[in-house]
Length: 279
Image (tube, rainbow, N blue to C red):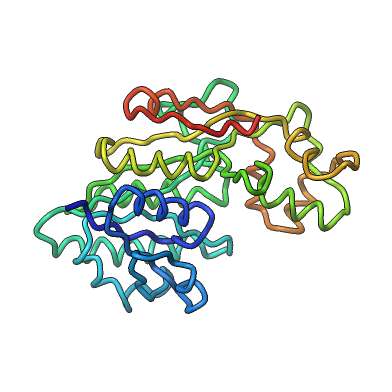
């Protein structure tokens, strides 16, 4: 019998792809849902667990019934870091009561590495942007907790084939300006990974990954102007990154980073082969 896996954020872009990947490979899948609307999106035979990461005490006992937690849920409010820590504390408290350790796949991301002049791999020193330092702090705290086996997945910017491999913010900008728009930063390119490729990486990390290790998921690097230019025939508009801060929040600092990610570890150690380059 395959392991029983609980996915947080399981109806979002990343999480829903993970749920589909796990179901296709005959896992028992539970999906945390904070609303009936979210619950209705969960595909059979996955099981709905009603609850919210911001109120984990109401459902955290369910941790006793699973083998693996895949944590992809993340808000973008100012308190997202404290909500995540509160959630992890509740999970850790339940894990401490278990007879067997709980395997957790924790999601960080490319923005935790910050600007880097060299190619980024799992050994690179991380300099997270301010709004996402909590990912490093919280995962480091989690690694010290008893009865927890921790593995980290660090995706590039997650895209989907259905959205022309363009991040959601590029679609928002097209609607806002009536033309594609990107930050006015010279030679800006973005590391990307298609969500179904990323879902396969999560499964491989679950099946073959090593405790305490991190795995970067990146398929390709595409110039920002190329990605934005696919969305409309209009010329691509360049805007100050501070305009994105004011409109969407300072978390958008990540889109101004210069990064080249290497996924050699995932390819060599896990056999991960992304199918979608987005090129």
